[in-house]
Length: 266
Image (tube, rainbow, N blue to C red):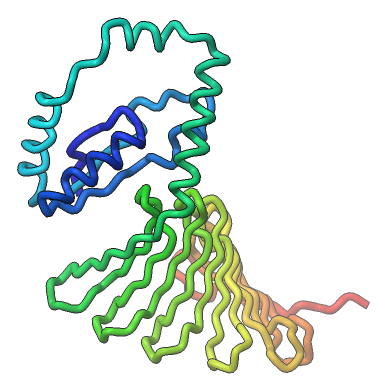
């Protein structure tokens, strides 16, 4: 997608989108949800109209023609707008925000399929709001025609959670949680019984700890500790009695360098 025009506001953006649609050009309004709902931030530059690369030249020509035939703004309009009081501007911005918010939440969601390798099978299917904010992505990574990854996004378009079928057997065994766009936790059900038995914790999006859980007791069988993405040491319950009894230290390339028994405190 390529930005073909930066409308003055959301209302103009949707009007121009419909204008391009009359000529068979599918245009997307981006950033309209931010206008009016951001208080004191200026609206200029937030709203943009995007089209596919192959439609850019035609769309640009139509918009240039529209600019030439549109009546010029009345004298003093721009300057008078700048001279309005902050109260008037705030009320106007709030009114526009309410209108656009109503349009935003009532308008139907948009779905778009992407075929990266052009084999006729969609590799990703994106669900977005009318403003272009991502809501959900369903992906087919191995090209078998079935979704094997589902990623969901917040109202602001930030990823919040994901489900994955990493062995492509039709069962989503892996679930990931995110905070501020960074993965924080991963739960994997390795035997497909509906109960996760491997939990990974992340710090700043980087693996920090992996816990293998004994489903019979719910206690850890093995805890692996990582630093900089590399395993440094682990604790293991070798006899499955619920107590971690062995500590293993690893080299930078993951080789065991030291093994010691953990003496339980009395």
